[in-house]
Length: 132
Image 1 (tube, rainbow, N blue to C red):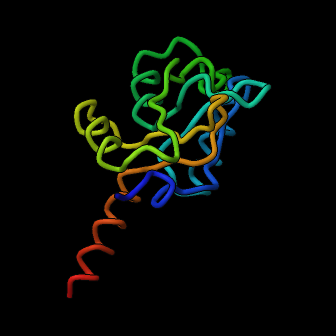
Image 2 (image 1 turned 90 degrees about the vertical axis):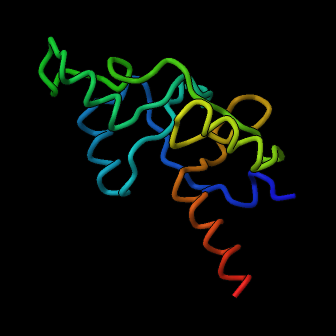
């Protein structure tokens, strides 16, 4: 059985709620990512930020982009999974919820990795290539 820890990206970029949104967007651009976990000062996951969420917020914006913090735009929840969960259960959640990323946390809720749709496609490709 394949576990989440077998396919997750270990070094995921975490944003801080009090971080300027423009800084988070620049970091996401530099890393070529579309979102990630938002953590509090103690390192616990308090939400997630995605390009989709940013776009939705900007469409109904009352502040200028330079005034926004990550906390103004982030979703106040994040789909989380543990490293020893099965990839099958991860997929069931992602498909049922129509989401593209799950944050991998330790038992205390601190992020230790992330699994994205791209990670899953890479895993599938590796499985198919092994059959050739």
